[in-house]
Image (cartoon, rainbow, N blue to C red):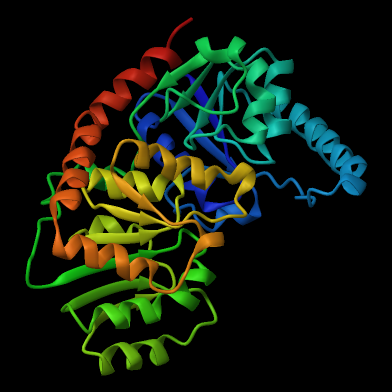
Length: 356
């Protein structure tokens, strides 16, 4: 059985797709997931993981020599590791720590694949393109990639947690209650926690609302609950809930950041969403992610820099008074998710990994 190493960065945006990729491969390969201390907290205990810490240095020109030095030492560490531990295939899902691992894999002439869930290629994966065999991605029009590497692109449906492929009943319209989901990714959203409460309370003056909302650490859940209860808003508030949408997917609309995994899950569950991309994401990748769905008429986009109080209220009021646009978005979401099955993804990925 071939051995596969999956390397991933420390954020939830890198780790979650890497875990899903791991679960796709574990039946056919002996797989290990390598991450750093930051990423380890997202990985379940039943996964074969190894902490391979590479110190993250801030992106400042003055610190560039130190960063290069750290990567060099991590590269030497990776070389030593590859001498002791044999792998046939290395897959990078991006992130700072993938650089030395993939470079070491190249020294040993290992087969290298990249996995890019975002609509614009990440910096590490972009640097590693020259060494790769293929790039698995969700968007065939992947941005930021040199034309000479376009032949390496393999478009696959978004890789989700296996629970999403079970025969679950998906979201259906309910004219009596407006069910709203607010999520901000693995680290929540300070902006959402600060500014969306008043929008929801304003909407409750016109509609009966059931709210599920993720809050940033440090916010007083009881205080928020009290205010929502005073406005007759049924609510479920939390800081972080793993696989939330696997267990609770009956929402009419979501307000979300635009991490690749989060919006792919919403799309698969046929939940139209208002995307407010995180403006400080590397290379503004969240805006590119949401733009892809916007171009397919599946979502609405509000940019944080142009955000005004009442913007969310306006969109939802419009939806509730004229459901034609909303219905079109649901129809389009269903269309783009039709081929996203566990079997289809497995067939495509395994085809390329098993090629000589």
